[in-house]
Length: 101
Image (cartoon, rainbow, N blue to C red; front, top):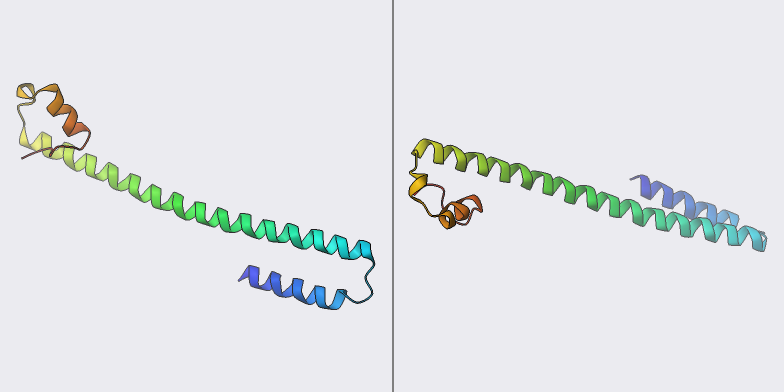
């Protein structure tokens, strides 16, 4: 919404201000418009990064929850871990094997 208002104001200013402007004023206006466009792009990129960060944060929370559930299942099953090979234990830790069968 903020961007629409800004674009409307810029368009109005350009229409009204185009009459009788000096070459310096015209160049200054172009510089300002170009900077506004770059800033708009940066803001859009920042919004996208915030969305990506939120999604990653959600995925991190889900990964923690899964790890806690797997750990609880292992404790509840009272598994004979000493009978497992190191590869089997590593596979469970890496989430490549079921925690409990």
